[in-house]
Image (tube, rainbow, N blue to C red):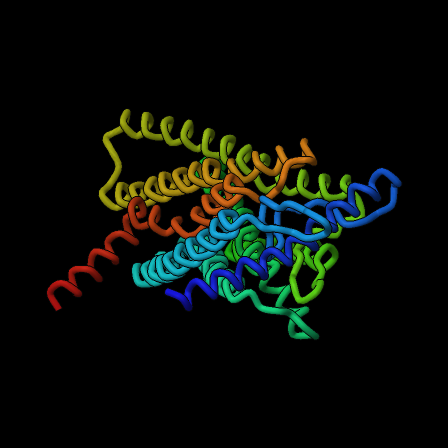
Length: 367
């Protein structure tokens, strides 16, 4: 118990010292903004690796609230746990897709799970490193900050996953609503190109911001803090929210709305005839299963990412709001939770995957 108490005391002291840098930087920024001199900006979506929301300055010394430090510590442990669960679950679903021979029919869904697996894996790696509170020095420290502690790899996967989700939606829309056109032009090379674009989008969108606006100062990685002005920060955050949330949801609503209308019309036409063959019925059942699964995934995305984007907007509107507090941690946890729990939606709703997993479980029970 004494050993644990000493470690906790050292951790709080380390956090307290690091808060001084953050508060001083915010003070410099507010001073320079009044003088129209570019300086350190407020915190952005990618939060610094070491922060606390409750900081007081007395005679040049900082005191970090132990409750805030504990909250951040618990948050990191919770994120590591869901990252482990998400990595395992996405890996199992990928196996089930290949085992059920659905990977060739649903390449974009395979890509979706691969991106979620990638982000979940680096959630575990990144937040495990953050728990170590490494003192960064030299070239190794710089690259650790830019690639891992900055959450760069995590956001590669998350941003690519969002792009891929929109690509799946458009793909389903073209197949169902414009079936003749899609059969003629939606070739395998187009799908493979879309998959590659989704991965590149995550890299291209995330990496420049991290490298331009991040620094290693006194052994601490400060992520996406160093914008030239508050306007540049707000523009960056607004652009991301518009393209990767608002426009994405608009695509979901339009495409799946048209899909449901078309499917209902097709069902009425089929009912007016003698009825489809058995093979056609099975094909339609699989198609409807995919559509139902993707609608649930998209709805979950809209709900899970709403809190963190609302919080970001609140921060942009009111610059005096402390960026990191309990609401921030809760919102970010829900967003990470989405990427890690997606595979459970596939298990519950995608029939081919469900069948393979049932077979695996039955083999374990009776093997």
